[in-house]
Each structure stands twice: as structure tokens, then as C-alpha cells.
Image 1 (cartoon, helix red, strand yellow):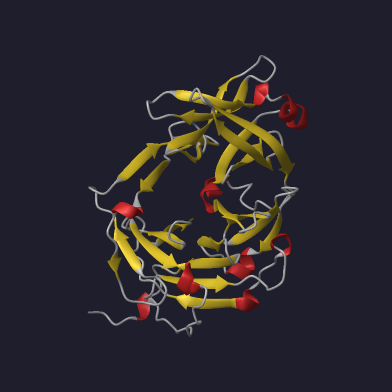
Image 2: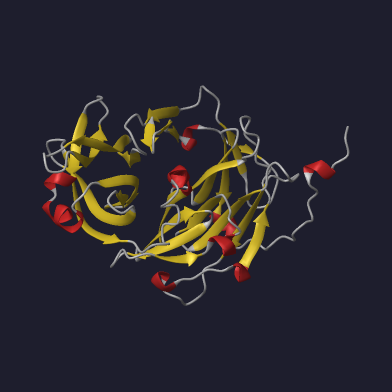
Length: 336
């Protein structure tokens, strides 16, 4: 479980080996495959039993966790990043009270909330507890000949107010997601909640909003195409509409460097309306998450009933926009 402001939460990560699961083709533009994940499929649950939002990522299929450990008398508790290896043991990769440069820069404890691997780089988003501001850190996680590991966080930047828009809402941490870098690895893109996207040039790590929540329509999930720097917005319309989801694409402006990109609704195009399944718990959510799979060059979406859907970007990049329909609300449908 994770704890924030006296409340407890349960966090787990589901890992699905899509290559070992036979997709079932369905009809519809762009979204091609639907994969139901039965209990017998190769799915692994990794419990995040450390307090706070602890799972930062996976390294060689082993979870990288943010923990809080006993520190020096001066700081009491200290932030640490730990690798849980396959035999169940843990290796401490980094401790803030042993990082002289970060102690000098920020003093108090950094609460690491999100992580992202990009080739040899490892990015960490952390909250500074003293003033609830955000810091983006970059480092390298290395594996040594003796099977030990180490993490060196060698670059960081404190973010301005309004860049990470979920800062003041601890229950919205789930809305913050690393989307990836552009193909040339000059900029990092992060969904900072409510459909807003921030861009972080890798030479400075100083972020700015490149797509506002108003221009995104406050969509619930966002996908990113590293080849074209296009942004895909998954708008969850359940349960009010007959079609629970619409997927829009906002293409990146031509001849603009990735670090200078800005997006707005003027180039937004509807490309598909997948019939995602609404969850059986709240009956109000049909899309739980979206991620890019570089092996298949697809966006993989998880619907409310643990169904996995693939959006092949090789088709979506050239998809003609489809016409918006005036979908009927559910309450407008005739009764049986």
C-alpha cells in the first residue's frame, strides 16, 4: 500500500507478455487487435508495498522501487531507490543522505514518485517535501561485473509552478505519466494530468507546458509517437455515450525542433472510436492506460475490463480523419 496525507492506497503493476498472447482481430479504423487477458495468461503482479507511490520502473524485469529508510540524525528519514532482484533480495541503488550534491541543492528529503528508462538514461520525478515543488532528475543505472548495480543521478532541474499540474492533488498522481522522448532524444514528454503535456529539453531538464488541458479536452489518457512526435488523446466518454472512447491525433508542426514544439486543438483529428469495455466496478471508466511498444511500433491501450488493444502507428500516421458523429447519450436511447 501507499500512504499520503493519512490515506492508504494499493498499488500494483501488471506485466503482460503480449508476444505470447494471440490477438483477436476486430473491425474498425486504426485499432486492429484486441487481447483479452485471462487468468492463465503470462501476467505478473508486482506489489508496491512500500509507502508512497513506490514503483518507478522495471530493470531487467526487476522492479525499481522508491523507499524511505532511516537516515542520519540530521535528516531522520531519507529517500532511497532500491532494485528488487529476482531472488527476492534488494540492492540499494541510491540514497539521498549519501548524495552530497543533491543534499547541498535541496537539503530535505526528495520523495521519488515516477521513473522512466530511455535507453541508457533513467529519469526520476521527485517531490521536494519542504515546499511541495517538483524536481526532474536524470541518471544512469549500471550493472557491474559482480551483478551489483548502482545509480548515479548527475543532472536535475527544479520545475516551475504549473508545469506538473497535479502537484497539489496527491490522489491525481496516477495521471502523471512519462510518455517518452523524440527519436533524436532531444526532449522528454510527460503527461502531467488531465490531458496536459509538458516538454523537457534534455540539455536543461527545465519543463514547460506544450499542450494545455483545455486544448486536449481534458482527456484521460495520452499516447506519444516518438517517430513523429505526434500526440494521441484517448477521450473517455463512458458512461454517458454509446461509444465509450474517441481517439484524436494532434500532429507535430513541420520543420520545428522537438524542444520548440507546441500543440493546440487546431490540428486535432478524430482517427478512431474503439469500443472499449467499461470497468465493472465504477462503470465510469473505459481506458485505464496507454503505452508505446517500440517492438511493434504500436500504442497499447488497457480498457476497463483488462482488455489490451493495439493501435498500429504505421497506419495511424497516415490515417485520414473520420467525421465526428452526434452520438446519442445513453439516457436518450429507447428502453427495451
